[in-house]
Length: 238
Image 1 (cartoon, rainbow, N blue to C red):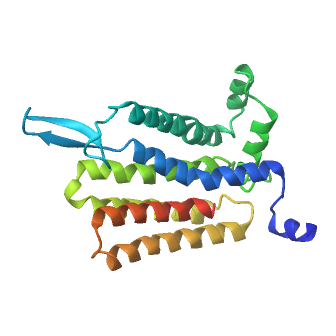
Image 2 (tube, helix red, strand yellow):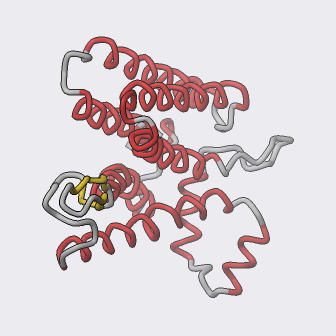
Image 3 (spheres, rainbow, N blue to C red):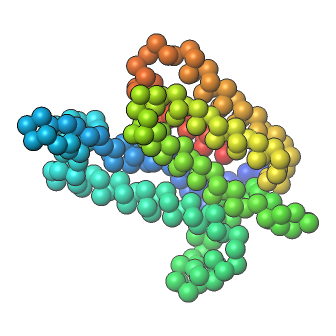
């Protein structure tokens, strides 16, 4: 068994388990948080004004009612502390000034350092005449957030063609990431670079396949399913 873990490069430790749980929960936490914060404008003929309502309940005013306020605050906290801050942490982890900042803020805890090492471990760290690509760990999470955000942004800017635009943008982001991995080869092992590129191309093909095969379904529901399923794939293999 020890030889198997050594060949795969996976270390079965408590810190690695925490990192794996976080990666698996990242998708669901981000998806549910964005859904809770999703809104739409609804026109009122009585007052001749537009009002904000919760997207999935036309009778629920946006941030109106104690339950939606509490749920929205919880979603914002989740996005801030479990999504945005860890992403920035991994993006800035390679810089020495960032570690000094953590020291000044008394946040340089051993568990935090260990988690950073786990997430950035597979990437080239600047030794052996290589560039430091450890920021790619945070780049994946940042791309994950952008894929979520672009669907909601496009929905409000171009509602008539939001399905096609959002799907094309998501597919382009995935292909861009595949091209970056193929060119820069950020992983220490070439087999990881090859597999990463292969799976990213597969996800892009999956996006395209879903677009052309499932056009007969409800576009809004299908876009959300495509958006969620594809995002799960993007993050789950990382």
